[in-house]
Image (cartoon, rainbow, N blue to C red; front, top):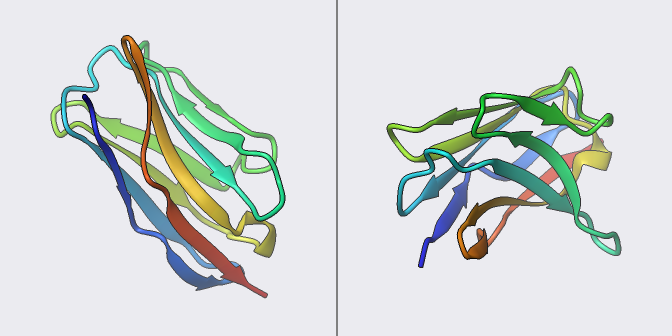
Length: 114
């Protein structure tokens, strides 16, 4: 079964930047990869997606600040987060559908101080 491992979370001041990475244990070629986040007491929400066809999509709340990218050769997907705000504080998860399993990483904590 595929494993997804996130890294790059941490504590940053408002306005700062972080880069999250997600490494897959097998090829992500042909797989739409997504980043989700979950803040305390809130539902998990989709942050960004990079489809297998090369299209990117973002939640309105992060458009213009976050950028998703992927490296199929290295089986990684990244999330560059700029202009971070306290409301971006959450656990961030990487996700992909590796037929027949919907696979999630363990999550990485991002905390933005005001």
